[in-house]
Length: 434
Ligand SMILES: *[C@@H]1O[C@H](CO)[C@@H](O)[C@H](O)[C@H]1NC(C)=O
Ligand SMILES: *[C@@H]1O[C@H](CO)[C@@H](O)[C@H](O)[C@H]1NC(C)=O
Ligand SMILES: *[C@@H]1O[C@H](CO)[C@@H](O)[C@H](O)[C@H]1NC(C)=O
Ligand SMILES: *[C@@H]1O[C@H](CO)[C@@H](O)[C@H](O)[C@H]1NC(C)=O
Ligand SMILES: *[C@@H]1O[C@H](CO)[C@@H](O)[C@H](O)[C@H]1NC(C)=O
Image 1 (cartoon, rainbow, N blue to C red):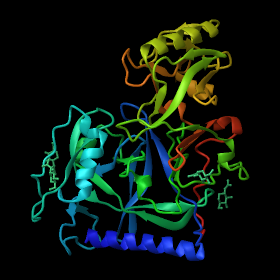
Image 2: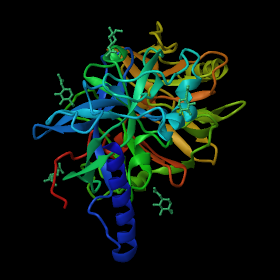
Image 3: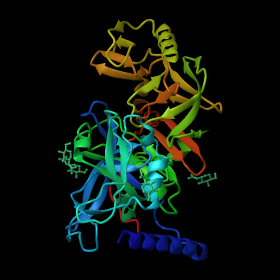
Image 4: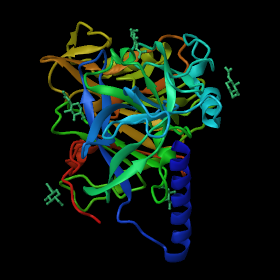
């Protein structure tokens, strides 16, 4: 069944390729688009996208998946029904088809992915099967992003549906993607935010979502995380090279606001890295000594600095903020102030490898933790962290970020608030673009 499906898809892809060279077919959409929700009900703030998982009883079922730009593949809660032989899926039921341990994807996912190097994971075997199915299934390991514990998952053939867009509105026209994704027992999702049932991989892995999208969706991911968890003001995520628009600036393609820096290759990781040479506080640089490749993370809530860098940042920042009275530190932060007024805080910039500058506005450097205590929103990662710097999501909120996988560059806007807009300003009114 799934083999046939894949042949059809491969055939369609072939046709659309041929078609393009003859007729230069230009579809009405330039990207796919999904809303982004900020969740504050788990152990740390996390962000999810909403996708359509199945068409059952004339309705699309919707589910929320955490955004993970580092994950090697997609995984989510197992559904109850398996589609293990033709006709075994009752009509109007969401079913999934398992991958066998004999198929190339199984070995590929098991040998190329970073989860498997985790010491907390047991070795995988080929010995499991499903009731009524004569084949071996493909168990793989996944690392649960909140607790870091390892769970066993089964690799399957999946189907996800999302809206297409011209960068201004979502269209009524939908786009289907058919990735291999793994599924876990719901007990592995207990630490997740409420109503979030999976992890959507947006890394450079061949098993992450962008790799499954066909032309003309250029392999480019645009991410705009909201600063509010108000569900009526979601952020936005696109896959596709743009344009992108945010209200009220209907004439401004957000790409015109971006600066670009190279994405750096990193062995053994499908994640994204950029070169940060220094953290600059009121024009005083704190150089990153050693390897300056900096990881970008959608699972870490605050930028993590190796202890020696963290100490120098705290010291320099506090010298420039000497007039503001200190408050007792509030975990996980060490430098807190008695204030609700950000005017006197020093500026922070990241000085990048190629001379570019990423300005971290106050909205992204200072976090108001109570009505009158504000903290420097960076954390100490310990003396021997793998990366000197890992940039986390508080520093991404209301910044427009583009991961261009084709050209291996990273685009960033700095705070959109300065442009009088925000990540919560995509116009999600559906229009008939076709
Ligand atoms: C859970 O999320 C789905 C998808 O966004 C949504 O349709 C549903 O209403 C949510 N359920 C609850 C109880 O919030
Ligand atoms: C599982 O089966 C595949 C295909 O036969 C084989 O390549 C792989 O080595 C096996 N893995 C294990 C852990 O036995
Ligand atoms: C899911 O996990 C729970 C608790 O570990 C276990 O009792 C249950 O049998 C598991 N369900 C399946 C379908 O594996
Ligand atoms: C990569 O760069 C080329 C040339 O500048 C551009 O035409 C193309 O759109 C870029 N790719 C993406 C995904 O933006
Ligand atoms: C959002 O899009 C709809 C459909 O194009 C349009 O009618 C509406 O004016 C837009 N809203 C704003 C605030 O621009």
